[in-house]
Image (tube, rainbow, N blue to C red; front, side, top):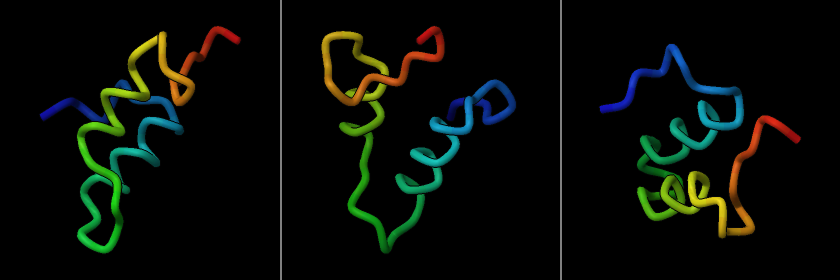
Length: 46
């Protein structure tokens, strides 16, 4: 399990969605958010 201490607010939002049984988010969404070739990529540098 990743440490939430180092997550950005966007990552924390996604992580809480993934861990919420009432939400459709899953680890595929997490992978998409960390794939620079994906539209859902979270890039703090921009």
